[in-house]
Image (cartoon, rainbow, N blue to C red; front, side):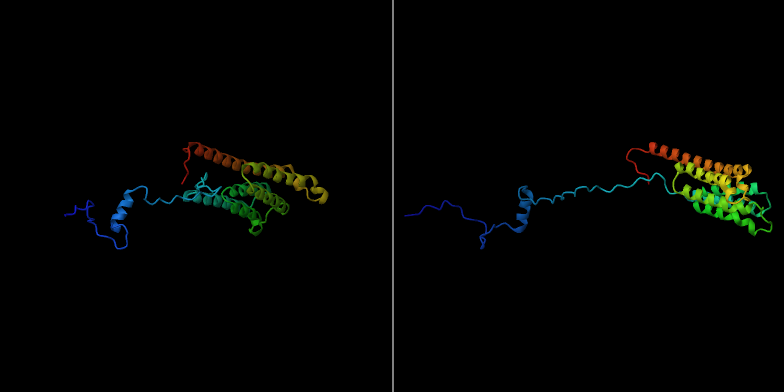
Length: 236
């Protein structure tokens, strides 16, 4: 009696002695790459810490001055100091020395802070010149020098809005000494001289007026640059 053939087809794949998938590792990797369910997930970025923001470049309203601007400032300050030294070294009456000292010292300060302090020191240059300074200069030098020092310090502490206070300080010191100086020293009559006050205050007003105009023009130009800048643009 013949037996019927086995309906189960023979296994043509080689049997794995460990009972695992007979596919090779390369084939298994291909199948895993094609199957989205078994594909490895890309790592997701962790949550951003609270309060942290991406760093943004800080806009600069005033770009750093170029070489030409720096050279012009140095030239302007040097011209003011040389002119002041000329008037202090050569013979001259005290009103001329006083006007040029106050005016050129405050103007030189516009080109750099150290120019102003250098002009303040040049007030005593006349004592080293062959020509003796006026006798009134012994009173003018410490009195006006102290007022100038306070004006420069207050002027450097702020911008446009401190200039009126600097002018009031300068004029107030001279007027106060003119009013009460004779009570302390009966021989100190120069501060009460109208020409002395008029000369010193005139030089101060001209110099501080120039400073106010310069700073006001700078504010207007910066405001125009900000308005003309496209939204979100950051200057280099």
